[in-house]
Each structure stands twice: as C-alpha cells, then as structure tokens.
Amino acid sequence: MIVSPKIRGFICTTAHPDGCAAHVQEQIDYVSSQPKIEGPKNVLVIGASTGYGLASRIVPAFSSGAKTLGIFFEKPGTERRSGSAGWYNSAAFEAAAAKQGIYAKSLNGDAFSHEMKQQAIDLIKADMGKIDLVVYSLASPRRTDPDSGETYKSVLKTTGGDFTNKNLNTDKGEVEMVTIGAAEQEETDNTIKVMGGEDWELWINALEEADLLADGVKTVAYSYIGPELTWPIYKDGTIGQAKKDVETSCARINEKLQSKFNGGNAWVSVNKALVTQASSAIPVVPLYISILYKDMKEKGIHEGCIEQIQRLFADRMYTENTPVDEAGRIRIDDWEMRKDVQASVAKAWTAIETDTVDSLSDFKGYQEEFLKLFGFGVGGVDYTAETDPETAPASLS
Image (cartoon, helix red, strand yellow):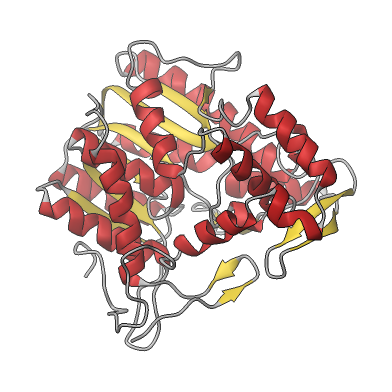
C-alpha cells in the first residue's frame, strides 16, 4: 500500500509506518548521542504514543535502560487503511527497544477506565516490579467517568468573554482574525473533568493500592503557560482552568509521595510550545509557534519534544536538587520565555500579515513538523514505495 498525507484542517487522516519509524529512530539517535542519565528503571507512561509522551518513553529507555509500559488509545492499520501515527510510533519504539534488549510493552485502550488501570497493574506485577516513575501525558477531547459512566467533552474557549486575535489558517497559509467565544460554566467544568488532574490521581491511587510504587517514586504531568497574547485562549481559558486543577492534584500527590514513599515527588512540568496534534487544534497558537520557531532557531535555542524531555530528565528531575519556580513547577519553557525571545515574537506578531508570513515566521518549519507527526517528510524514506499498514507493536500484535 502506498500512503500519502490527507490533511483536514489540523488533522492528518493518514500516517506512514516507515516514516513514523524513521522519526522515532531520529529521536532515539539523539538520546543515544547524549550523556547517560542515572534515571528511572521502571516507567509507566500514560499517553505514550506521540509528542511529549512518546519522548518520555524514549529518554528513560535509551538513556537509562528503563523498562517502560506505555498506555494509549490508537487505531491499528488494516489492509486497506493506515493506522494512526501513535500506533506506528509505538510499533517502532518497541522494535528498537527489543533490538537493544530493553523491555517495552504497550496497552491500547481507554486510560480513563478502571479496566485499563487493572490491565496495567496486572502487567506491572507480572513483568516489571515497582514503578519508580509515572509520566502523565494524556490528551483527549473527551472522558467517560469510570464510576458514573457519564461522558464529558472538553472545549477550547475563554472564560472571560469573547477574544479576538490573529490566527494562522494553516490550510491556506493566511493570517486572519479569529474570535473565540466564552464558555458556559458547565463547559469549563466538563473541560476540567476531561483535562484536569482527577485521572492522574486515580492512577497514582490505583498503583499505591496495588503496592506498585517504589520508594522515592517520581511522577510528572505536563502543562503549558505561554506568553500573555495566548492567555485568553490558554492560561486563562478552559484549558488553563483544567491545568490549574492538575496543579491542585499535583500538590495532593506530592504530599502523599513525600510522606509514604520515602521522599517521592510529584511535579508539573511547564514545557515549550511545540507542533503537536493537540497544539495544532488551538486557535492563535499555530501562528505564535510559527513566529517562535523562527526566532528560537535564529538564536540557536530551538528544541523539539525529544530535546525538551532529555533536558527535563538530565537537568531537572534526575539532579540532586530539582530547580522549580515559585509555584513548585519545573520550567523547561525557560528558553521560550526569555525576555529577548518574547520581545522578538511580540514585534513580529504586531507586524505579521499574510504577505509577510514567510519572512516573519517559520511557517514552512511548522508545516514540516506537522507532517512529521504523521510520518511524512522524514529523510531517507521512499514515499513512492509500498509499505505495510498492518505494522503493529509486538506486544499488541
């Protein structure tokens, strides 16, 4: 089967097995080129198949030789149709880990459910031993409460009235104005139910009850703050309210781990704005990222997911004293939020229009990164050749 990109708005409906594998290998090669980290040995990654979650499997596996269990909800390929990018990423990760004798297994299904938590517990007991790192990197537009059975949907809205600002139409490459409406309180509450910290706590509680958390266990969830120009739709919007709930959960988890697990730690890591399947869906953000990429690349400080997570492990989580901000958060968005970077971005933001997109932003780089998420445009891959859409992770095939 020959697979080509089919893009609808902020989603690509196809993914290339060989391209995804090559992209995963690029990330593995980067980690392998860096100094080894005295990191975790038994890692559970919830939301493990793309972006920051995938990087959070690659770094401990190929830097510390860690066993990893990845949880995700991805679509397998069939004879006639390609699977999702996360499915092929996970297949490539497991294959690469197996070549180096590194344990890697995956579970595909609803991470919010009690059933998936029990499957994970059973597998950890059978194969891994106690977990010393839990990464929570789940991104989903909806969640079914495992007790009530009610399904909640998240929304991308403000919480303080309509917000109008510039946006990049990524299909047309045009800068246009967009207005995002305000959420009703129920919509905000539902977004918190989906994207807040409740499920993170449920995972930690389930592992504790099963006696599967090691002394000194660490856990981290990922967040974003960004500059003021994105705050109405992000930090102060419905997503931001959910992220505040994650921080509240983090405080409770940290207290538990500190007292019960010999000084364990829970953190929220505030990461850099990057092209991911989630960020591509947020109005205003693609234009901001395109401008940001240009400036950070010119300054030589641009990072992708793998560089960010490598730095998180090497310079933050697995150092003697983890540096945090005044709210106790890890900040690996520090280079993005440098005053000189933000001043350059603000200047370009004011001036940018459709006819200056290419000169004032790195829209081309944005497009390239977007396609790479789905395995397209990766060097060394013959996209005119037949590929096997039924490629699958060994632990799931």
